[in-house]
Length: 137
Image (cartoon, rainbow, N blue to C red; front, side):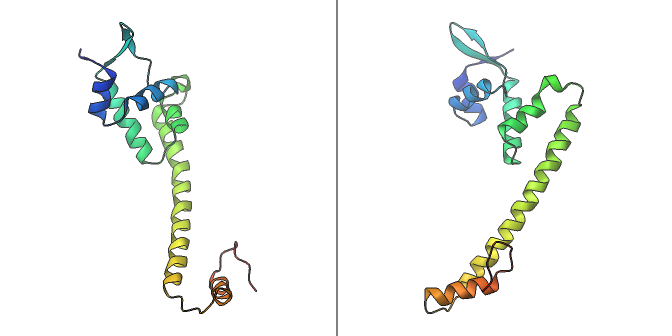
């Protein structure tokens, strides 16, 4: 089987070698075999790195990805670990979407602003915000 250097893995995966070393240090990747002090990887590492990148794009943290890979969790099937984390992440994503809608509304309101001074603008913003974080006069 083909053995790859850390530079070759990084180039093929589209990441920096420092990311690979970091993933090893936090146990997302197994420690590489060493030849004359240099890391050597089996080409299957590329698939694991691709999964890490997809999980990060889905918003998973390193700690969450580690839970998916955790071999000490053998009593909980991989699919179940993935689904549990995905359910939690969906709740967080829904909250982010709601926050983004609120932000968009405030920005759109700002685009319609015709206030002449700061005091008038503050009153205008506070009257038009119905979120719990805004004081009403």
